Length: 176
Figure 1 (cartoon, rainbow, N blue to C red):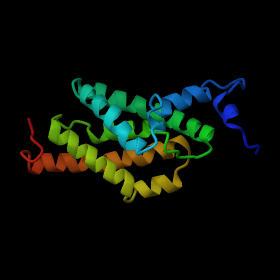
Figure 2: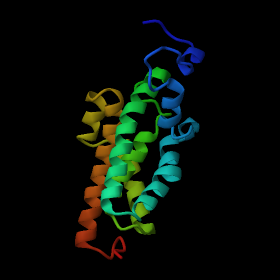
Figure 3: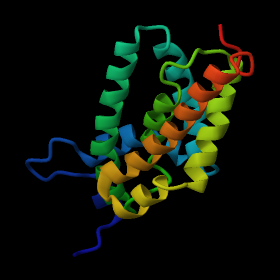
């Protein structure tokens, strides 16, 4: 396979390419937030995923779930495409997976400063530490699905812990 220059990577003029590289990179990096040199995943979660989760929590859970499913699908499509553009399957610049994962972490969790902070900290922890099956998805599932799936599974850990804590000790996370 021929190595492409950076200019060739960012300019995709091939026919039958419905999702151009620039568009994929722009979406997968969440409007280039992923290009921040220090902790782009944490920054994207804080700047984009947290406000999105707070906004979506104002709607019926079906709307929240539907939006999360759409973001998951878009993440799978764009993360793989952007990864190929960068030449790294799971580039640090691809941060749309953080959005999908954090939205899973906050699903049907009451929104207040405690739950948002709890979910943010634990989501970043599970995303970095990668317990099983997060580590399995990270190593064995390739392409955009693999890039996104490990974050969604990390979000699933946070979701489960959040609901367990809310059921056992509602005052701990400030049930409304």
